[in-house]
Length: 79
Image (cartoon, rainbow, N blue to C red; front, side, top):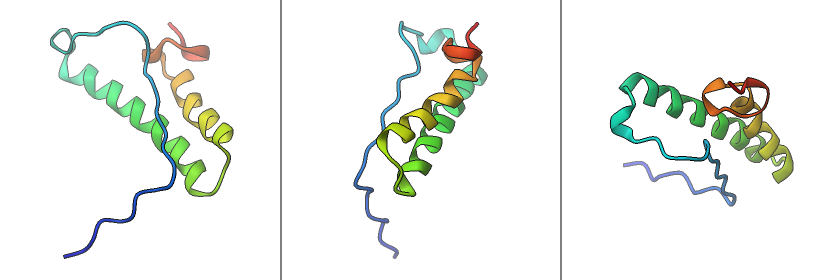
């Protein structure tokens, strides 16, 4: 049995928007879109941190995919 890899020394948290979206009012496809967008943002920021980048660079890397994704209503991709 293989041991789990050690946890990174850093943490990254993101927030996909304000307000409340009741899960029951969302289709499974729409929920998957939100999860995919959040995952993309986390992976972008985590990649920077794994390579020893700064916290500021990691935040910028995480925010860019969210700004470019219209479901998050932020920045360039805002609806």
